[in-house]
Each structure stands twice: as C-alpha cells, then as structure tokens.
Length: 196
Image (cartoon, rainbow, N blue to C red; front, side):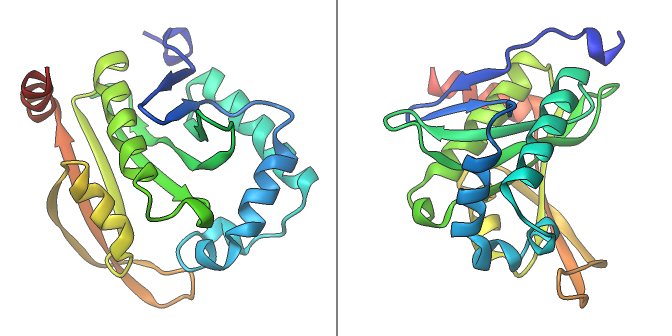
C-alpha cells in the first residue's frame, strides 16, 4: 500500500501527555520552548545551531504537518495534558514501511527534564508504532556521550544492540560513536501481555 493512503490517528495520550502531530500556528510556542532550552539542545541537536525565529519555527511546523500527512516523516509534539504546555518533541523517523521499521527521536524542554516525561512519551510512541503502524522493529539511536538519552531508552525497556564506533560527527565536528537500542514486535507483545 502507498504510505500516503495509510490511515492512523494523528494524536494519542499517555498518563500525563497528549502526543500529536505538529500543526500550523505553533511556531511561536515552539520557538519559546526551544529558546528556553537552547543551551542543552545545542549539545546534541544539529538543528539547534541553525537560525531561530518564530517565523522559521512556523515554517518548520507547517513542513512537519505536511510530512506527517504525506507519511514521509511522523514528527510528534508532547504536551502536558494538565496545562497544555509544550514539553518537547519526538516522532518516528527514518522508517521503512516495507518492514515496517521506525526510529524514535526526542528532545525535552529544559524545565521538564528529569521528570519522566520523555520515558513516558517513548513508551507511548513505541506502543503507537506497534499497535497502529504494525511495526516489527523500533529503534532509538544516540551519541554514546548522551547519557540521559540512553538512560531513557533503557528505562523504556529497549535493548542495547551495540555501539557503532566512530560512525558520525558530533555537533562540534568531532568523531562520535552511536548507541543503538531496539525493541522488536515479539518483545513488545510479551511486555504488553504482562502489563495487561
């Protein structure tokens, strides 16, 4: 099936979060969250080194919205259900519909760091991938030096498959290695049955 014809929800909830596709009109809100968190984001995210403005973020929001609809990328925004505040960003990226296989990426707004929101989001997004997108494999990859990020993957129940040594460049241009975590459908089904 042509991916653009695939029907699935553009939002879902976890205990504390509303997780949904980006929408037009969110540029200012995203800009404020990114600027508030910029120093931390610059350590790991190449996009955090690019020019920032509300207008640029609005353009990005509209492209993300279009990409989600076209099933070319599945970016997601994380909102605190209680207050509606933007907690961070995530999504399912670099996927292969033929497997299907997806990769989860994430960032957190600094004021919400260390409160378990990203682990909660990762578990919710993995559930969405396996339940709604019929994923056979979900991956998470990160710089080996990004300890907080790989701890999220481990708390969410993903398995470390290995470390790709000197496989990429860090945001500062130095060589970096990448930790690769995964969960496959059989593992998810086993854990899902235990939770129920």
